[in-house]
Length: 505
Image 1: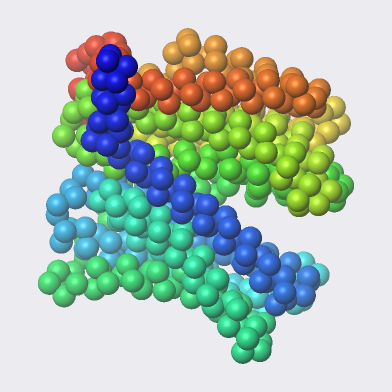
Image 2 (image 1 turned 120 degrees about the vertical axis):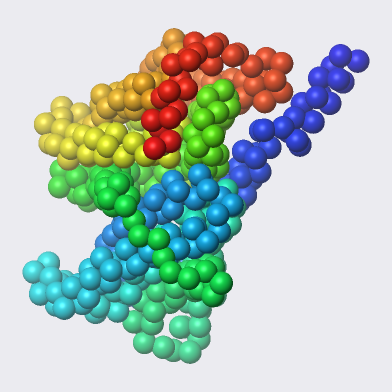
């Protein structure tokens, strides 16, 4: 009977307790990302049929440049909206006015970049020895503007805790538009440049739908940004550029140091390694607006509970996902071709992703608390290590030099996040148990990467799965309320409340 009552209590917790908001977004977010990954594969097949290999490469170069620029510009404005809207969710007029001005702030620099690139496209393409790149830089220029505006609009949704809608309009809708419109280009025998117009429409149409709220006639004017808002936005624009390391800056470094075959293996490993944080990102999107609300009402105890639950779920999600990816790698890699050599860098890349998961919730807490300097310092320092240390490590470590640089930067700079979070609101990012589990998992992964044996990979995956199950189980226990450890709240004591006042400013 006690077992039945325990199961009933757990089911009640899952359906009604505080854990439900995280489980809901986990289901929606993972479903959206699965669709996104599948649609990207479908879009790649379509583009390979519509374009020659050279044109496809030029398109991806222009697309990558505009997408990174648009996201960097958009994330700053979206975080300004998230910061303010999460603290005043019921003030619809203020939200609409702020969103209007935020859209203007994003449209001006992105529009200027698009216009400048149109005029500079021909000389830039000639300087790179790729004259056909010019047409894609010109035709795809509007894409950067609407990518920026769409990213900003999703920030308002996340501020109102409408995270599922944010994921849908930001990730799912653009992919769906591409899947629908790209076949029309082929069926109607339209010129290949129409592919650029489809990509632009894929972000324009979702933004137009979300922009209806800004067009409300019952709310007039806009709310200007403060000097602090501009500083906060600018720092996160830079932090976003610095943070795009996996599958971006690292591949550039690899191309400078190693052969094309080695770069291809590493690129495949980096794409698979992006799956390690598959579920974590959705959890952090849910945590941010809730933390912002708790900071506003100065609920220290509630913030500690929310932080600890999200932290445990995020660690568990990364550990379990990493174990699954490593186990599936021998099956997935042959499907892509002769890429079995990608398994070694994939295992090495699991180490920085796993270690970073322990700090991810603290990092998101500092973002919603307005601590942009920390994110900028950490990402810039990490970027500097990635851009410099592989050149010295490559003669001894070979391709492992790049994951080694990432491991080094995580070990050196992420403790800054933990220290600042503890100073700000009294939360504890790492306990001794966490440190021991990190060390055990990292040693197991390193052994698996070095030996490459099936048994060592299985051992490392099993250990990660056990660690992930431990953190998820403790999150469930915390949500149930009968096994939650209040020592974190009691240890922070009265010192946490004054710091909450500072954090909410």
